[in-house]
Amino acid sequence: MIRCDIYKGSKRQEMYLYVPSEAGLKQVPEQLLETFGELQLVMSLVLDQTKKLARADIAMVMTELQSQGYYLQMPPSNWSPAKRSENA
Image (cartoon, rainbow, N blue to C red; front, side, top):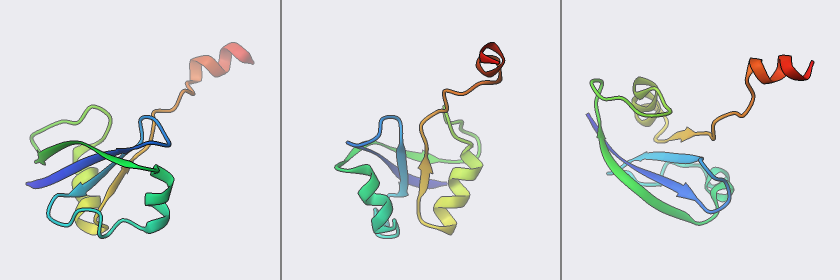
């Protein structure tokens, strides 16, 4: 289990930064923090393999939190194969 905090920034909608609660933002590269603008804590959670996240694979989130100290959740893509074939 990993206790984590999830932040969103003022610059990009639907982009979230997960960090271990005990380490906070210490391991997040400064350049990445700058892309977020002003950070706001969205929520804190306890992650474990039995739970699911809406837009991220929990195993990947946990692995990246342990290996690099943060996980970056990008905004969903608006591209879909159906939209592409309609425009072709």
